[in-house]
Amino acid sequence: MADQGTKKVIIPRSSLPPAGKDGEYLVRYRIASQDKNRYSHWSYIHKVTGKPLSLVNGSIAQINSIIMVTWESVPGIASYDIFIKYNNQTNYTYHGASVSNNYSIVSQGGSSVEIAVQIGGIIKERRTVNTIFLGTLSLV
Image 1 (cartoon, rainbow, N blue to C red):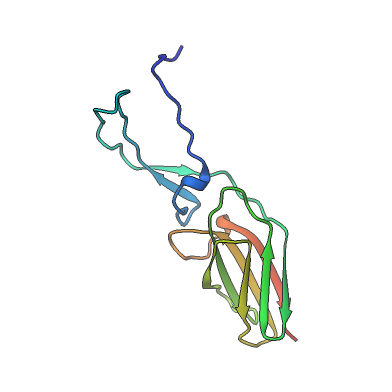
Image 2: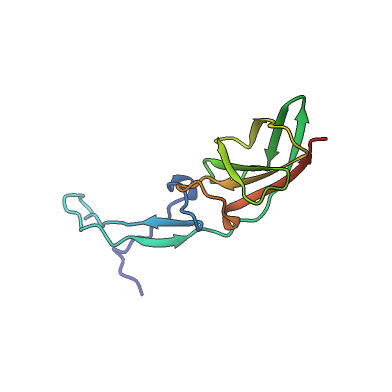
């Protein structure tokens, strides 16, 4: 049986900082006395894996030279990173961030564009584990 003074704290994902490159959060804590007069030293830093992500529905459309991307919101995610590649390039390039579930891009031309939407992260690097939407659009 647990000590009656033991408290369990659950921190919602929306209160956490952006995830690291592997979808992990770096967390440390300290303990306060009930009267909040005394505090422990900070704990060591722990890596905590967030809930696994799954792909959501979304769409990509083009109006004149503007490419618009929309996707379903993911509860508890405060920001999203957008990565883009044109004409079947090998690597994605970081394009920007969004705090809503849509993003607009001025087309750079070419025959096709691929867009990947990830949960917002500290390191702006394309990571499959952080991806929530992938889409391709023909520009011709």
